[in-house]
Image (cartoon, rainbow, N blue to C red):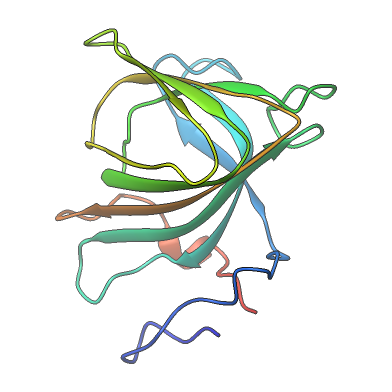
Length: 158
């Protein structure tokens, strides 16, 4: 089920539904490996891109696999630098494994299906996602607007 952000709504779908519309995750990053200052890594589908106010609220799924943008064409794995640019991020691992290194503290975390974690806006991370397939649910929130053109991001409907 899905509804417009112009009304008080519920956003979601049954957990067994695989979304149909995915877009490349293409973002600015000072350590971008795809091209100077840019990173392309996997695909997103968004369930919601606006909150009830002017703050940031981004909710959706992110995945990687062999053949996905920026992913290894044979293994499906992907390395990406990430700074949680758009806000504080909450994550639930649906499928696959990843290793995240906090570059400031040196802490290394390994996540697997069923794990839940949260990261602060601006934390500088190295993320290594293992193939052949990975999928996570995310919710990104911040008191300020993200700066993203959320009107151009297609929302997933079920």
